[in-house]
Every structure is written in structure tokens, then in C-alpha cells.
Image (cartoon, rainbow, N blue to C red; front, side, top):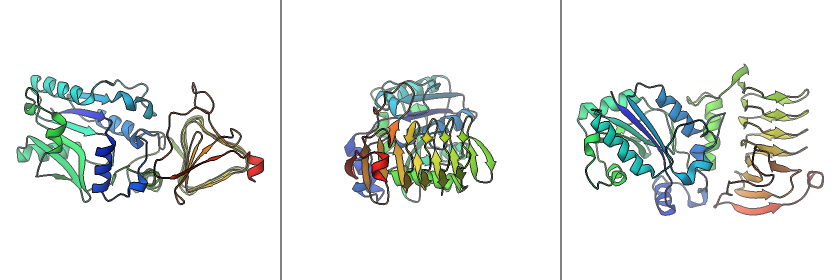
Length: 337
């Protein structure tokens, strides 16, 4: 039976820039976030992949997370991972798989959200008798491989060997979202809520197109217009409106009369009274408007603040996007209106 390895590894800025440019993305769209680790609809892309592969019939499975990314993955707690040198750990796992007689190991470096059939990918690898098989889609190569553990020899650079793997490539014909920009992240949410992909909300569909996770509360007079998602323990106050593929993640609070339209409110964020958020992403004290490419750090806790447990108010480990125009908002909610 095959094995599996999942890697969440940091890349240098030069490598990231090269990858983005090769995919045709504008340098202005780069972000300083590990987007695959952000909780969306109750689960990150990283968590979804680990969960999906854990349900497949792999003999062995190992998960490696670069220590610099551990704080960037919202749903890492509870997982058994090795947060050391990820590529050295992957090489060690391949050696162990070889010694155990495993003939094929699926290796995924998490970044893009890719819908694929692991059994079909491994079958393709075996049918062609490859040492390394890499997956691709219509836009280019993906960080998804099947590896013959016999490739491991003394002093081999596993990462370079994978990056230089040639044809035949395995063509992924299903949904792919490369998760390179904040727009990609919002698109994944919209596609999931509209059933255009298999990334499913982690909650109960309380009525058509509206999902709520355990502990979510909607006060009298608030309106949730499908499609929309409310995460675990999210609180929606009176007279609020949540609409147009918006997702309110776990432990968020949307205060009285605020409108959230076509926006993502990331976990542990408080949004104040009487605001109007559209085409935006809110994360603690960081507010990004995608249409205007503007990123603001909100200094007034009455307007927006971080409410994650065990994190002091106003403190966040997230960075503003590097490509957006930056500013600070210090007005109170009353003055803003």
C-alpha cells in the first residue's frame, strides 16, 4: 500500500515571486500570509487536505510543518505534526517507507487547494513506471507528487529532485484554486458556498445555502441571506445583515446594525456597531478592501479588534498585505458614521 507525506514549508521571497510570476499573477497581489493555513468555512486548506488523506488507505502518513508557519495555521491544534526541518523530515519518512517495502508515497506541499483522486494519481504513477510523477493543471505545475522511495540516496536534495521532475505529468481536471492572493481566498469561499467545488462548510445547513457551526448565535432582527456561513461560537447581533457569500469564522462578533457583504471575517475578529463592510477581509485589527486594494490597520478597538483567546487585545500575528496601500484608521465608530 502507498504512503503519504504532507508538508507546510516556508519559501523564500525570491522563490515565491518566481512562482507567482510564472502563474501570471501581478506582483501587486502578493500577500504576506500562509493562506492555506487560514480557517475558511471552519477549516483551512491545510486541515482539509490532512483530513481527506487520513481517510484514504495509506499505510503510513506523516505531516511536517515549518516552525515559522506553525502560528499561521488556524486549525493546527490537535494534529500530530513534526515542526522541524520539513524537507529533512520528508526524506526521513521516505527512507522509512522504503525500509517498510512501500513502493509509492504521495507527497503534497500545501499551498493550493487541489481536488484530486489519490488512487488515480498513484495508479498513473505506477502505470508509467515513474520514479517521480508530478501533477499539473491547465495553468501549470502543482506541488503534488508521487515518489518512489527508492529515489532516496545519500546526500540527495529531495526538494530539488522533486522540482526538476519531468513528463509525463498527471493532469488534474478537477477544481484547483492556487490560493496565491486574497482574491483567490475569497473566490474559494464563494465557490464553496455556491457548490462549485467540494470544499464544504463545517457546519449544519440550517436552511438552503446558510450554514452554521456549533455555538453560532443570531440575535432577533438579524438577517442571514444565503449563501453564507457562521462559524463556531460566532455572534451576530440585532439588525445585522450577512449576505453575498460572506463567511463569519469562529469566535467572531458582529455588533449591532453592521452589514457584511461579499466579505470574510476571519476567526476571532470583532466588528463594531453600524459598519458597512463590502468586498473586504477583516482579520483582527487588519481590514483589507479588495476592490480598492487598500489595507488599513484599525487602531480603535470600538471599530475592530482581535478577540481570539489568549491573545492580548490589539495584538495580532498577522501582517498587512505588502501590495496594498497602507494606512491607519483611528476614528471611533460614532465619528466614522
